[in-house]
Image 1: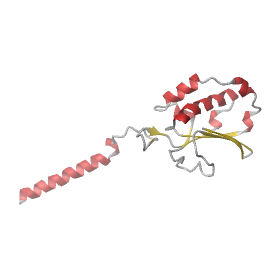
Image 2 (image 1 turned 90 degrees about the vertical axis):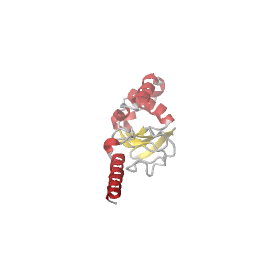
Image 3 (image 1 turned 90 degrees about the horizontal axis):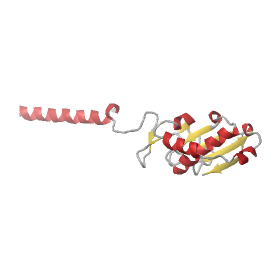
Image 4 (image 1 turned 120 degrees about the vertical axis):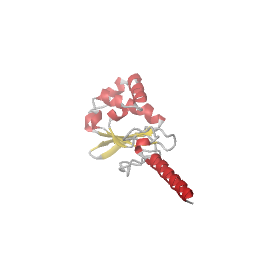
Length: 163
């Protein structure tokens, strides 16, 4: 009877240790870096919320960001036709999980660069697959597709470019 009790105690201790191991962040099997979120569809890292371009220049996003930024050729004739781009405010909504965002956002950033718009003055918001950001930056913006670039003047939206 005593040996049965000891066996049950050891089994209980073993189960407790396995539970601690499985839930401990130290032993987390996820490869998601701190500050990123796991895409529930692919398991890959994704960013959510307001970010900076610097966030996209880190792994695992840097490869696609740099490739698109470096190889894209800006139509300077078209850029030169835009009068006073600094008079506008810009918001970009994108998904780091989205192929269109991965292709188009680095190009948008390069266009801003060519226009003389400081990319740090551009609001960049990353959303999940439901087009939701943790702090609700998308609310009231009718974000249905990403990327979406919203251009405003005097706090009034004057145009948008969608996907």
